[in-house]
Image (cartoon, rainbow, N blue to C red; front, side, top):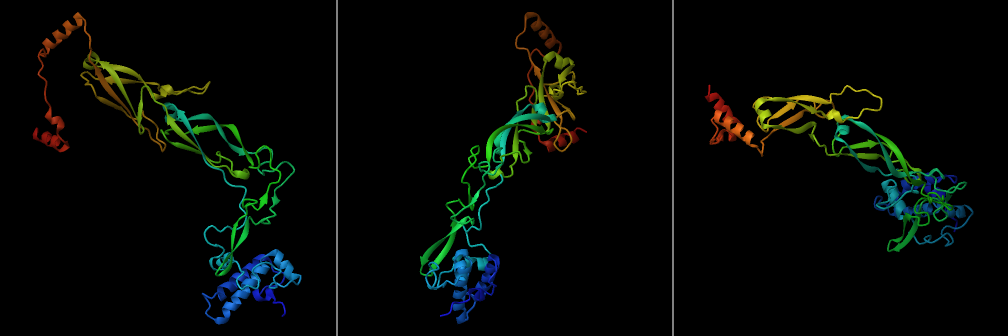
Length: 394
């Protein structure tokens, strides 16, 4: 029996490359598959095309065939002459464009990959968060190995093509079933799917292409950041395996407790305590601003207002709030919050004889020796009730 012309079966020339052979096979497989083509002759033709592709897609089998070996005589490997020795993966490729189902791989895995993002936490003072600052950080991350420059090999050596998978990164596994022999592709165990091996790894990084190193970064904290805000530093994170691109570094801001001010959004709150007499008579207090905590660079001059005057009007009640517009925290998108000052009136707890005498005289003058107290149910009224009472008084 004359040897079949496998190139003619696929409709390609004898010098066709692997891509042309695969393309021709996919086209014929889609046309001749029994599920698609009901022609009785199509099934036999489909088997012939599958056998032809099995030979011509394998470099060793193709070379033997070109030398005159009989592809179906038993000397070309298991599967020939049994009617179903084609690749299940290649059939799937013909219908799904190279996606041979879940878990199927294509080609070697790259050794060079992007690195992971990194996160560090930085504590700043309230004034630094409000007005911005620049801080120096020491970070411990993976950097490119200075000995092998990311290649992972010892100096003077290079990765070599894996002899097991011949650089494909995957190997074929044949399994017998009632359908015949089904071939699936799995990552090569010898090279772990990379398609190459490193016979002499770099001693500095053990073949990973990167090492741990501590370095110093300058981080600019924008004005207006709040507790939990993350500042992104692009490509300052972990360098990837094989010297791949670095991930990003995120600096998470934590604002330290302040002795005078508390922050709510972009507003600042503080409480000032005044004696009973000052609340009754009125006074003016000089209080610090948040700008007082700003430390200017060495040799620099600043015109920041570090204090402000708070006027306590005569008769100020405990709990009274005064709002100072624009003295809060700058917003990330512009503008500035307010400073809300709450006045707490301090009542003396210990009086000497003279002080007690004077207070009794004052109580007598004001007719307050026996105060009865006043219930104020109107304070519980809602907005509509207060509005109604206002109209009724006119």
